[in-house]
Length: 127
Image (cartoon, rainbow, N blue to C red; front, side, top):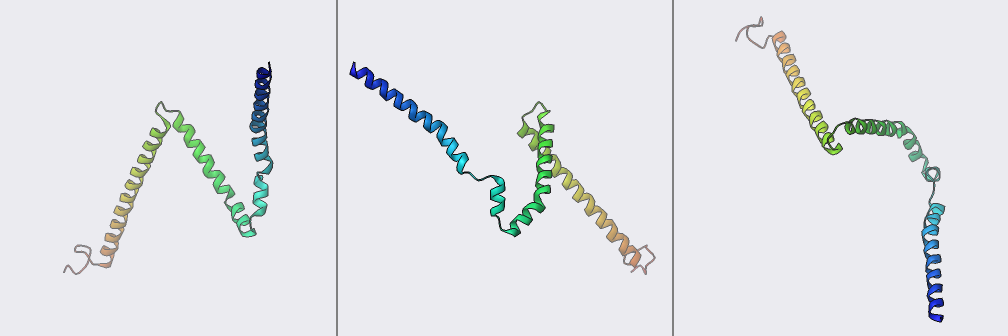
């Protein structure tokens, strides 16, 4: 009979210790972990100022990111695939825009040369 009572005691001890670890561990972490406000108060004044200035930007970036994820999730494809396609489209559009800008700059440069008389047939000397 003593073997069964010692086993029961061992099980009860293990359950008690497990409960203390499972409940007490997270409670201890929550107790010692500083809040966001406490961390902010520990910043030096320059960092506090920068953080406050960038708060709106960070919030806007996060809102844009969430909006994009919502748009990507409407597709039947996985989000990462849709995101890669969107990034590729953005890069292609940026390249097209760069090409258009280069063409416009070239046209402006030629127009300025014609005005200055450096190109034949533009009223210059025709050398």
